[in-house]
Structures are given as structure tokens and as C-alpha cells.
Image (cartoon, rainbow, N blue to C red):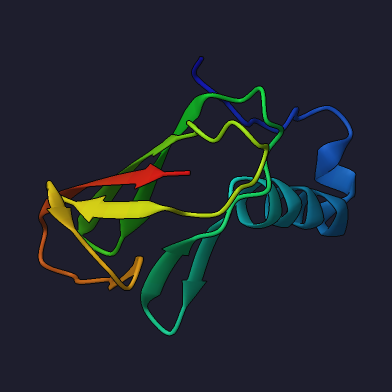
Length: 109
């Protein structure tokens, strides 16, 4: 199941504060995309019936394609494995790099 988040134009243009909170709630708190000091982490809080979702994140000239797979049977959203271009990252976070490359990130919950 592909997840898509969008904002409707009608009405939202008058509520710029509301739209920014909608973005923050959807991207940061539900999908779990956390960017702090040029470091990317994924800490989702999704329903147990969401099996997967994708995020495309652009950092300056680089692109990060993030694929999150929810294989947890107990409804926990804990990140079990984190891969960048097929290489397992034990820290489960990466430093963002501006080098024009496309990175493939896989996160297993």
C-alpha cells in the first residue's frame, strides 16, 4: 500500500499555521522523518495495519528514497533494521550529505 500525504488548496491558504502543523504531524510524528543537525532518523508512529510506505526526501542536491516496511506483529513501531544502499547501519541514523547522489534507505519495523 503506497501512502500519499497532500494538502488541499481550498481553505488552507488562509491557515498557514494550520498547514505547517499538518505537515509536522504527518511527516514528523506519524511517518517519523526526523532531521536534526543534518542527521536523518526514522521514528514512526503508524497503525499496525500499515504494512509499508515511501518517502522521497531531497537534501540540497541529494535525494533520499526511504522505504519503510512494517513487519512487526505486535504493533510496535520500533526500528529493528536500517539500511543505506544495502549496507546495514547499526546506529539507525545517517548524516545527510550534499553530493548529488541518490540514496536508497530501507527501514524495517
